[in-house]
Image (cartoon, rainbow, N blue to C red; front, side):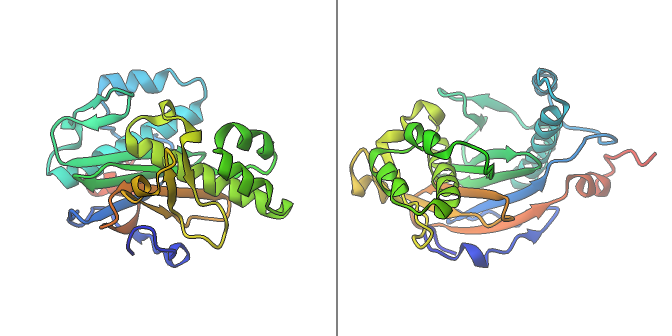
Length: 259
């Protein structure tokens, strides 16, 4: 599946415990079920454990630990190293990155679903959101969408707005995460497609259609309760999607307590 093509509904999440080789023209996206870490011998650093302990709600602590453990396991396979030896640093805008060149990654989670995206030598960002019909979408759109996006959004029928908002939101989030700037990047300075019939794509960056053509975007098909998207630099990449079971992976490697 090439970047920017509208084949999201045909997406297949291949179950795997280990990744295949990651080629330079590929983006790998992994779907994980965020699960309690009870019985799992984790690979987290002391700093990551302290970070997890700062979450007030246990579900948020477990989501962080589960996603970080899976991240370390997958990076270990991609980089041929032990998960506990993986070293991270925070960039200028606090986006986590690997020490060393080559492998790029990004991570997102919402409720019990996590997504991890990987590429080699190209910026990548991913976002997933659980759809909440109770949210005041019109008010959020005013603050989150550009002028042209709001014009398109306000012209939709009421029954179309829920899915259109979350399509737009996850596409925009994935892009600003791919840039490395996160929410420091003004959301009103670029436009994405919103309508159901349009393929996921950047339309303009700072008013320039040419700048937008330097990035590829794909929606990610999960369950109807979630919206998700991935963005990577360039248009010459294809996407491969996998699902990963953390408990099974650790059981296979002998890092789980069966008692």
